[in-house]
Length: 159
Image (cartoon, rainbow, N blue to C red; front, side, top):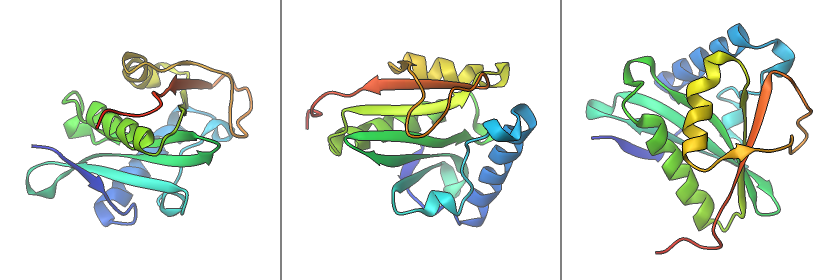
Protein backbone atom coordinates (compact mmCIF):
# COMPACT_ATOMS: atom_id res chain seq x y z
CA UNK A 1 0.00 0.00 0.00
CA UNK A 2 1.19 3.50 -0.83
CA UNK A 3 0.34 6.48 1.36
CA UNK A 4 0.63 9.96 -0.10
CA UNK A 5 0.67 12.73 2.49
CA UNK A 6 2.03 16.21 3.06
CA UNK A 7 5.52 15.97 4.42
CA UNK A 8 8.64 17.98 5.16
CA UNK A 9 11.39 18.20 2.55
CA UNK A 10 13.82 18.52 5.48
CA UNK A 11 13.31 14.92 6.68
CA UNK A 12 16.61 13.04 6.32
CA UNK A 13 15.32 10.40 3.88
CA UNK A 14 13.59 13.07 1.79
CA UNK A 15 16.73 15.22 1.74
CA UNK A 16 18.71 12.23 0.42
CA UNK A 17 16.15 11.68 -2.35
CA UNK A 18 16.17 15.39 -3.24
CA UNK A 19 19.99 15.44 -3.22
CA UNK A 20 19.96 12.48 -5.63
CA UNK A 21 17.41 14.34 -7.77
CA UNK A 22 19.60 17.46 -7.95
CA UNK A 23 22.70 15.39 -8.71
CA UNK A 24 20.90 13.73 -11.64
CA UNK A 25 19.68 17.10 -12.90
CA UNK A 26 23.22 18.55 -12.90
CA UNK A 27 24.58 15.35 -14.49
CA UNK A 28 22.09 15.53 -17.40
CA UNK A 29 21.63 19.27 -17.98
CA UNK A 30 23.87 22.33 -18.08
CA UNK A 31 23.80 24.18 -14.75
CA UNK A 32 21.91 27.15 -16.21
CA UNK A 33 19.15 24.76 -17.32
CA UNK A 34 18.62 23.08 -13.94
CA UNK A 35 15.43 24.37 -12.33
CA UNK A 36 15.04 21.74 -9.61
CA UNK A 37 14.65 23.06 -6.07
CA UNK A 38 16.59 21.97 -3.02
CA UNK A 39 14.92 20.98 0.24
CA UNK A 40 15.12 24.52 1.63
CA UNK A 41 13.34 26.07 -1.35
CA UNK A 42 10.72 23.30 -1.26
CA UNK A 43 9.82 24.37 2.28
CA UNK A 44 8.76 27.82 1.01
CA UNK A 45 5.33 29.24 1.84
CA UNK A 46 4.13 29.03 -1.77
CA UNK A 47 4.88 25.28 -2.04
CA UNK A 48 2.95 22.24 -0.85
CA UNK A 49 5.15 19.14 -0.63
CA UNK A 50 4.06 15.47 -0.57
CA UNK A 51 5.79 12.15 -0.22
CA UNK A 52 4.68 8.68 -1.20
CA UNK A 53 5.55 6.06 1.39
CA UNK A 54 5.19 2.32 1.34
CA UNK A 55 5.14 -0.34 4.02
CA UNK A 56 7.07 0.64 7.11
CA UNK A 57 7.17 4.27 5.97
CA UNK A 58 9.74 3.59 3.24
CA UNK A 59 10.09 6.66 1.03
CA UNK A 60 8.99 5.87 -2.53
CA UNK A 61 8.86 9.32 -4.06
CA UNK A 62 7.97 12.98 -3.73
CA UNK A 63 6.35 15.86 -5.56
CA UNK A 64 5.37 19.44 -4.95
CA UNK A 65 2.93 22.10 -6.08
CA UNK A 66 3.96 25.74 -6.29
CA UNK A 67 1.27 28.41 -6.28
CA UNK A 68 1.99 30.77 -9.17
CA UNK A 69 -0.99 33.02 -8.46
CA UNK A 70 -3.65 34.00 -10.99
CA UNK A 71 -5.22 30.52 -10.82
CA UNK A 72 -2.12 28.63 -11.87
CA UNK A 73 0.21 26.13 -10.23
CA UNK A 74 3.52 24.53 -11.12
CA UNK A 75 4.58 20.95 -10.48
CA UNK A 76 8.03 20.80 -8.87
CA UNK A 77 10.44 18.07 -7.78
CA UNK A 78 8.61 14.97 -8.97
CA UNK A 79 10.97 12.13 -8.11
CA UNK A 80 10.58 8.39 -7.63
CA UNK A 81 13.16 6.50 -5.59
CA UNK A 82 15.14 4.11 -7.80
CA UNK A 83 13.82 0.90 -6.14
CA UNK A 84 10.22 2.09 -6.61
CA UNK A 85 10.42 3.01 -10.31
CA UNK A 86 7.95 1.35 -12.62
CA UNK A 87 5.42 0.78 -9.81
CA UNK A 88 3.10 3.72 -10.51
CA UNK A 89 4.39 5.96 -7.72
CA UNK A 90 4.80 9.01 -9.98
CA UNK A 91 1.27 8.59 -11.34
CA UNK A 92 -0.11 8.46 -7.79
CA UNK A 93 1.79 11.60 -6.80
CA UNK A 94 0.72 13.39 -9.96
CA UNK A 95 -2.88 12.41 -9.27
CA UNK A 96 -2.65 13.90 -5.78
CA UNK A 97 -1.19 17.13 -7.16
CA UNK A 98 -3.92 17.32 -9.81
CA UNK A 99 -6.57 16.79 -7.12
CA UNK A 100 -5.10 19.56 -4.96
CA UNK A 101 -4.87 21.95 -7.90
CA UNK A 102 -8.52 21.27 -8.71
CA UNK A 103 -9.59 21.78 -5.09
CA UNK A 104 -7.78 25.13 -5.09
CA UNK A 105 -9.68 26.15 -8.19
CA UNK A 106 -6.61 26.43 -10.40
CA UNK A 107 -7.45 26.76 -14.07
CA UNK A 108 -4.07 25.54 -15.25
CA UNK A 109 -1.18 23.42 -14.05
CA UNK A 110 2.28 23.86 -15.60
CA UNK A 111 5.69 22.25 -15.41
CA UNK A 112 9.22 22.36 -16.74
CA UNK A 113 11.19 19.21 -17.42
CA UNK A 114 14.27 18.34 -19.39
CA UNK A 115 14.45 17.75 -23.14
CA UNK A 116 17.14 15.05 -22.92
CA UNK A 117 16.45 11.32 -23.28
CA UNK A 118 16.84 10.92 -19.49
CA UNK A 119 13.52 12.78 -19.11
CA UNK A 120 11.56 10.69 -21.65
CA UNK A 121 9.68 8.74 -18.92
CA UNK A 122 8.63 12.00 -17.22
CA UNK A 123 7.40 13.54 -20.47
CA UNK A 124 5.44 10.37 -21.29
CA UNK A 125 3.85 10.39 -17.82
CA UNK A 126 2.77 14.00 -18.16
CA UNK A 127 1.43 13.47 -21.70
CA UNK A 128 -0.61 10.46 -20.49
CA UNK A 129 -2.19 12.79 -17.93
CA UNK A 130 -3.20 15.44 -20.44
CA UNK A 131 -0.20 17.78 -20.40
CA UNK A 132 0.76 19.36 -23.72
CA UNK A 133 3.73 21.50 -24.75
CA UNK A 134 3.42 25.20 -23.96
CA UNK A 135 5.62 28.30 -24.03
CA UNK A 136 7.86 29.18 -21.08
CA UNK A 137 5.97 30.59 -18.09
CA UNK A 138 6.60 32.29 -14.73
CA UNK A 139 9.95 33.79 -15.62
CA UNK A 140 11.39 30.77 -17.45
CA UNK A 141 13.19 31.59 -20.69
CA UNK A 142 13.26 29.55 -23.91
CA UNK A 143 15.89 26.84 -23.46
CA UNK A 144 16.74 23.91 -25.74
CA UNK A 145 17.32 21.82 -22.59
CA UNK A 146 13.81 22.45 -21.24
CA UNK A 147 10.34 21.28 -22.22
CA UNK A 148 7.41 23.29 -20.86
CA UNK A 149 4.04 21.61 -20.48
CA UNK A 150 0.58 22.66 -19.32
CA UNK A 151 -2.79 21.15 -18.60
CA UNK A 152 -6.06 23.02 -18.26
CA UNK A 153 -8.11 22.00 -15.27
CA UNK A 154 -11.88 21.75 -14.95
CA UNK A 155 -13.67 24.56 -13.13
CA UNK A 156 -14.35 22.21 -10.23
CA UNK A 157 -13.86 18.58 -9.35
CA UNK A 158 -16.82 16.35 -8.50
CA UNK A 159 -16.90 15.94 -4.89
